Image (cartoon, rainbow, N blue to C red; front, side, top):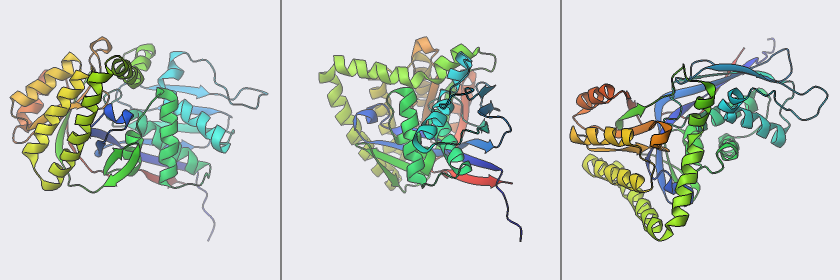
Length: 356
């Protein structure tokens, strides 16, 4: 039987929601995240030219296509100056550079194509998903050995390179799927029951937006994390007790999910939202989505992920435990201009598949 040559690799990963503990987790408190049933896929295939050609097919915020070319006559891979366009795919660029430095990634280059169901800058883990899927696809295509744990660590390193600081929770959930608890920067996989939730996204970057603004918004997590750090340093005596409260809150939330106690889980979501508001990451538009959901009968509602600020347009997402009020809440979100999605937690993690 003739041998089969793999000419293409596809790596797909899930979106995520942080159920409890976002922002606080950067400083060692517990946080709980879950994969949801939206996915991002990176395909890697050969190309005749050197360098890397990147095509972002249908990310629901912007699309772009550019070459990341190898400098003629030089040993190190450098990039043409595509100004804001190259910054808009900072995570892909950083992943390539990291793999070249760590493993001597093939300098012959490759075609990289990204397709996604995950809105950018919405707190649903698009940057981590891009890191994990790009790292996994390139490693597999160029024959770099390593297990899922190594892929997650590489992807987390890339995310830190771009953002300056990043919890391992996003790359962990993109890699492993299901539920993940991060406790004192250690990643633990949990088996918990599936939850039916609703996500409301405000302000996804429109396709018509110029790439400079898209870049600023797609990297907003870095700005938000830095802002929380500044406020923590300025008001340490106030922030430290909040961190202790979130740590206990996450522990109680895990017990509520295990016991199927939806009322208690919803109440804890509401508390977590209030704490996120206190540290300055809840813009007015997201706050209004949370309030409307609560008033219409949601068991719980909160910002999920990085959150946002009003000067960034108030973009981001809220997470809702709708109870019996799902239809009314979805209608209200859509009237408010939000993208409302019914999601299920506990989805499958990284999948790597060959093409021929």
